[in-house]
Length: 161
Ligand code: FEO
Image (cartoon, rainbow, N blue to C red):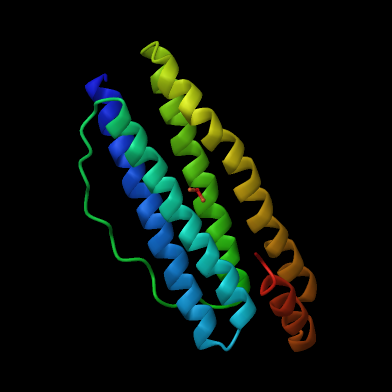
C-alpha cells in the first residue's frame, strides 16, 4: 500500500486508541462523582474506540501494510462538570471526523479505492458518534445543575447496551 496512506492509517490507529484513553479517563472522573450511569456510558464508548483502532489495524495488515504503534499521550484527569466532559467529547469527535475526512481525501488522491471503501464505514460511524454525544450535551444543558435532572439522565445513560 502507498506509504503515505499506510502512515496516515497508523496515525489514525493512535487517534482511536487515544479516544479510548480519553473516554476511559472521563468515565473514571464520572465514577468519582458517583454518576454510575454516565460512567458506564463513557466506558462503553471507550470500548468502541478500541474496536475502531483494531478495525484499522486489521485493514493495514490485510492490505500488506506495516502497523507502527505510536505513543499515546496522557488524557486529562479532571473536568469542571459532567456537561464539560460531554462538550469536550463532542469536540473530540468533531476532530476525529476531520481526521477521517482527511484520510478519505488522501485515499481519493491516491486512487486507493480499497481504502476509500473501507473508510466509508468510519464516515457513517462519525455521524452517529457526533449525534449521540451531542444528544447528551443537549440534555445536560437543559437540566443545568438540577440534581434531579442529572439523576434522571444518569439512570437513562446507564441503560446503554
Ligand atoms: Fe472512533 Fe468516536 O471515533
